[in-house]
Length: 212
Image (cartoon, rainbow, N blue to C red; front, side, top):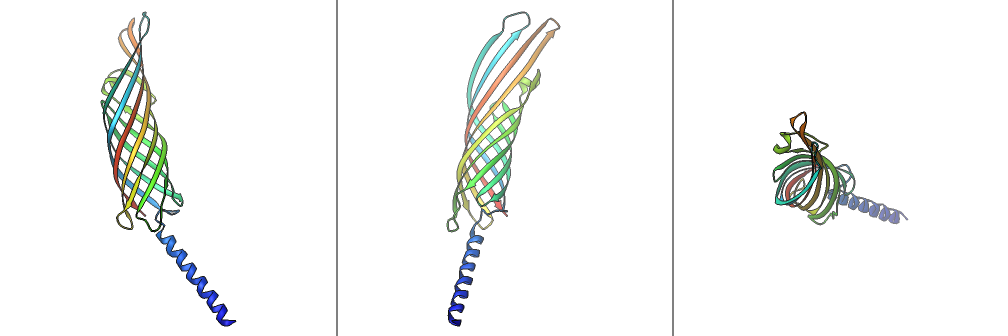
C-alpha cells in the first residue's frame, strides 16, 4: 500500500511539473505584454467625391481617383487578457500621396501559438480615428471630423529569443473622411465645397516586438 501511495504521489508531482513547464513555454499567455515597432510599405487607392456650390449658382459635382505608394510607421502596446488574445492600441503616422494623418487604432489580436513552435500565425482587426493634414484644405476655412479607420491584418511572429520577436504581416485598411470648406472672395461671392475622401491601402509590414 505504501508503495502504491508513493507511486501515485510521484506521478502526480511529475504531471504537475510538466504542466508548469508547458505554461512557461506558452509565450502569449494571460498577463503578458507585447511592445511592437513596425514599418509598412504598399499601395493606396484614393477616391475623392466633391460637391461644389458657388453662391447663387447651381451646385456641381466631381469625382477623382488616384493610386500612390503607401508608407506608415507605428508602434503598439499589447496586453494579453487571455491566452493568445490581446488588446493592441496602435499609433501610426501615415503618408499617403498628398495626405498625411495621425492614426490611433484599437486592435483585437489572436495568436495561434504552440509551445514547441517558434513561428506563430496571428490575425487582428481594429477600428480607430485619425486627423487629416493637407496643404490644400489647410488654406481654406475647412472643417473635418477626421478619419474613421477600419483595420485588418494577418501575419507571422518569429521568436528570435525568449523575449524578442520578428513580425511580418499583410495589412489592409480603409480610411474615410468628410471635409467641408469655404472659399470666400467677398460677402456675396463664395464657394462651398464638400469633399468625401476614401483611401484603401494594402501594405507589407515588417516589425520587431518585445514580449514581457
